Image 1 (cartoon, rainbow, N blue to C red):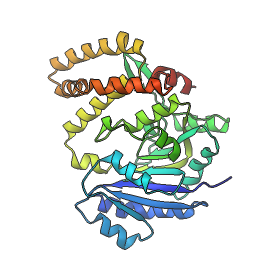
Image 2 (cartoon, rainbow, N blue to C red):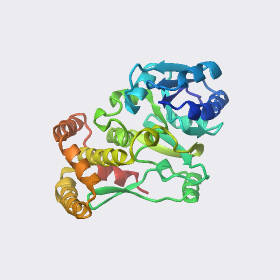
Image 3 (cartoon, rainbow, N blue to C red):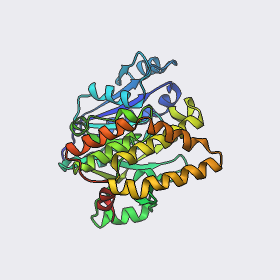
Image 4 (cartoon, one colour):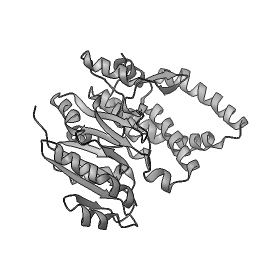
Length: 319
């Protein structure tokens, strides 16, 4: 096989200790890859000694520095601008890859319709995380993740199945840079975090560009990264819920929005008010305040030949 050049991009904000622990594994994986590779850390205006630590201990790593904190998406965009390879691998600072994780991912890019590939993601206890392979179903106007079993997934691979996935997690994914740029990268409406990777993968599927799950490539994600360390729990919940609204409003069919999603919103709103759960209420208000942007983006998707609805994509991915 041809080993296509790869750029590994890691966004960082005040992750000095996490990087010190995980960059050794990243460098080892890059050195084990038979093709050309580079590692780029994008420092998003850290206030710790991240940059100094990298410069001193990992001189082979390229560092891109932001003067001000811009968030996950902008850090990735900066890294891509500085990259020299046609394939981008994104890794969160708290992800530790296996030495040989790159080659199984990259082999899928011999197919012209491959947009992104997801590795098998384990937690610190060795449990496979469901986000490795994203299968969904529409229930009561919402998308729900389907459970899957690792042995079943491996059995399907042995039978020659391609494990199609709705999207690959932005914390550990390989994708084709040219396609990413054609999709205009991550949509800014999702700032500062959550759902931008799901939206990107869905927009790729609308162009018939596939996301694939590769269980022979493995990483460990210990979930000690930036978001939970620097943002209050309630704020994280509001942003995540708000962005889920954005995602569904972008991609569900008009019929599903009118006859399923919006009626269930009213029911859930009443239920949450009775329980004095203000996260849902605040998130809905924030989402509605951006409704004009959502409508414009939805129209733009149709004009770019993105005519498939989310439910049609989920049906295509299913097995």
